[in-house]
Length: 265
Image (cartoon, rainbow, N blue to C red; front, side):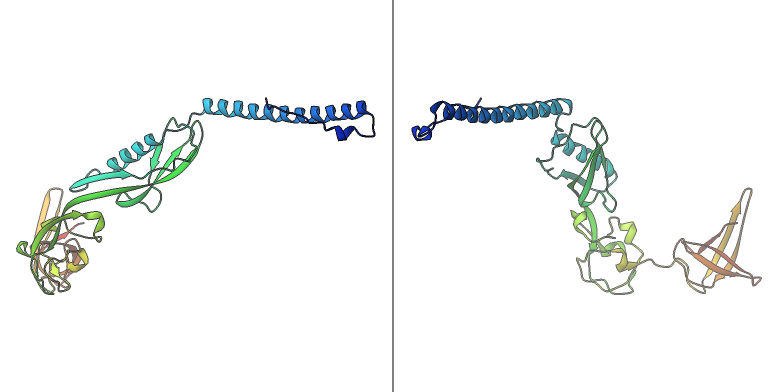
């Protein structure tokens, strides 16, 4: 309880009854004491309520949330090439989060487990809350660069390609990580040795050329037929191409490597 002192100077009692002045001074002191006591009582009551709330809903351990984020991203990146490392960013320690019985980690719209990304963390019970944290996913693996200068129109062979190692998340989209992905493609723009190869730099070489004689095949349950025809357009693998057969009829099929056209009924 605060130590309250009331000072009553002698001048205060001059020319009036000392008893009346003494009584008024004592009343003033009592009023001050009452106000102070009420304040102390209110403070104690508030502290008791806060302690009760803290006991009912303990504070969430933020390190557990970081661990959940890392675990979530490690699951999301299974199948990535090379070595994957995940680092969860620090969560604001000033956040007052109730301890969660079932933490749920999710990727917000527009986010992906690649490079610097945003991760959502939410709780539904016993107290609902949602926060967002930062994380970093690094993917160190091999990727393809031009081993020699490549001129426009050149068909890429294995000797034109060279592997380098680095963090794929820091490279442009559409890079090649396998020789089979780039070999046989046509150089779309001339480039110097050491250039990181991207899909827009190497276009797919057509497997069927216009005017080429192709073999049309069609198969089903218990039958398989084939016939020659002439391709009316060029086509990449998997594209639809029209072929004129000997009778003059035009049929459509799926272009396959080796001058094959697959007709599906």
